[in-house]
Amino acid sequence: MNEKNREPEWGYDSFDDPEDDSSSLRVYSDEDLEEQCRHYKRQLIETKGFFEATDKFPPYVYSGVASLGDLEKPAMLGLTTPEVCEKLTSLCLQRYNEDEEKNVKLERILRANYNPGSMTKFYITFAARESESPDAPLVEYQK
View 1 (cartoon, helix red, strand yellow):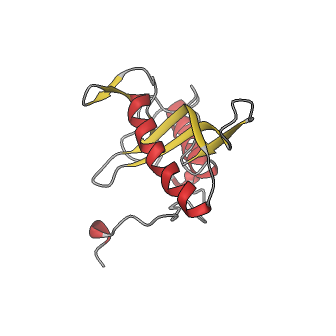
View 2 (tube, rainbow, N blue to C red):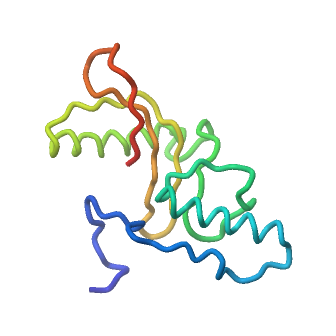
């Protein structure tokens, strides 16, 4: 099947069994930028896309997963980035709760990354409660 026409797979993780080949990245003329790119690549693989952006990352990324950064900036259709992430996360939680017979409730979005393109993929880290009780502990999830 043509990779571009492949339907997204539920539960498929494109970061399963990757290898860190950041040492094979082409040599940059700027040593600091080269080190930032290597650090980014290591974090990308180690966190499976759910990294927390730091000043050790390069100032820009031309391809791959990028941080959505400021969660309060407008996103699309008059929604803020957290509102878009909340809608996406709620859809995932609805399916997760049905499949796993759970009752996980979204509390708030903590951070979000995405891989733009024809099949944009989001990496959302959020806090949730595993019951209706407001006293239930917050648990960090990544979807």
